[in-house]
Image (spheres, rainbow, N blue to C red):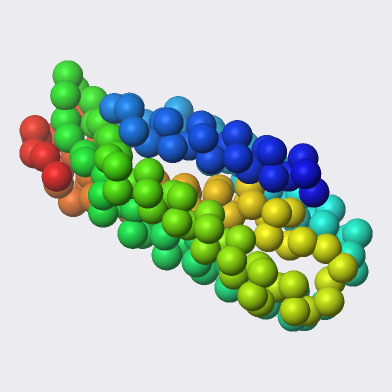
Length: 165
């Protein structure tokens, strides 16, 4: 479990860093989400197989992933999206970073209050932290792409206008 925590902290640091710098909103950013999702699913399946988790653990995991999605929606509204040099760009701010930290605290707090009460024999919160990050980042990305398209910008192509959000 210590490795899960270390991996989660490192990934969170990378994600927050990438959120706070101006970056093109293009298909290359999807690779990180895909990598996190694969690692997260592998870690989650390994945890569930090891601890023979019951229905309560699955329900707690589902609730945690709903929280991940909700924080992704909230953070997406803090990201600035604009067109520059024929490319769609995005950049978060201090509130984006703060929401990431709160999201992780909520994930681990939710685990402490809900998931551990199901007697699964392990720590589902740390075992699923990378999956949580992938879902949260993925939802944030989808909302950001949607916002870009609503502004008349094409996230993976040439912008149709120079509007800002």
